Image 1: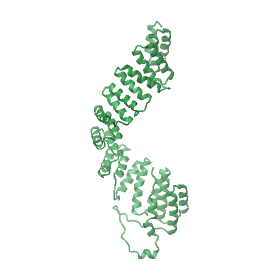
Image 2: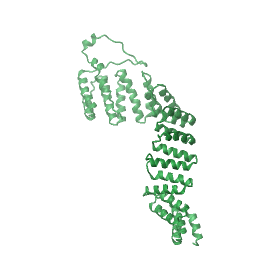
Image 3: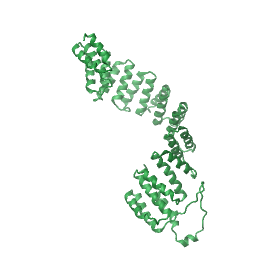
Image 4: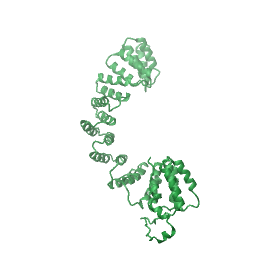
Length: 417
């Protein structure tokens, strides 16, 4: 949250200094025609006393030095029913800035409403405060109010930036009104201001939410063409392609980036892994994730090594699958899932004695989605290791779980139990 620093210039600038000139000097000054805004509001002359200006200047100094308590105390002393409308507006405005910088957004909004209600601020401040109100309403999730104040502000705004239009777009986007969001996003892009990543992602997401997937992807490609090395948008676009069931397109983009040595973010490896899985190329998926782990770009976690193991297993590369699952097991002290998979691979490799150790570890670690299956497979491993008594004990345990009751009961019957 940034700090407002405009009040000192607004309060102590030339306009205010002129407002406290001696009466004779003011009368002798040639009158200028009041500026009228586009909506017809006449510019207001700041009317303030020298005493107020001096006191307010001291308060502004406290504000600028982040002494918010001191500034607020000064405002409380300065406030009075005798203040001019302009002075009341400045007090409320300053209070609003202080509340904002103390993360008290609702209180800031109320003070800014009071400042605007005086209708005493010069046009520049009056209209800027309206825009600030729109921003604060948005921050406070008062989206309808934000949109209304923004529309009111545009009636007099001399310049509307891309960021301004994007604020209104976000008001509608957050209310799931994606059509209106697109209207204002197009206005943001039309300003010629450098597009921000948030605008681009909002537009693509709005199109996607309206099931205009091809348009979303086409727009994403346009953005990527302008910034082909931007990992954030590459991640966004390739995730979009995966959601749209276009994994080959995602692979093309990501492999091109990898060929340039620019696949430098974990989420890009994750997307490439997912794309290969969607294409039913598990060995390529496993090799991709393994490369990410080896390079250090992908953080070593249980889940990442599980992905490696699962992909190699689906590719029928059992030694590599076993290595992946074993590494995952080493990284998970309180979850036996990886140990369970280790045991399954060892059974496939006809190594029941090693498998029973893995199944035992899985049961001891716990946190299994289907613990009954672990007991059942332990029974199989014990049986294949010629430990019938241990197998029977494991099958009886497995009978106590719905997912394994049927198989365990059949196994026991086959053993005459």
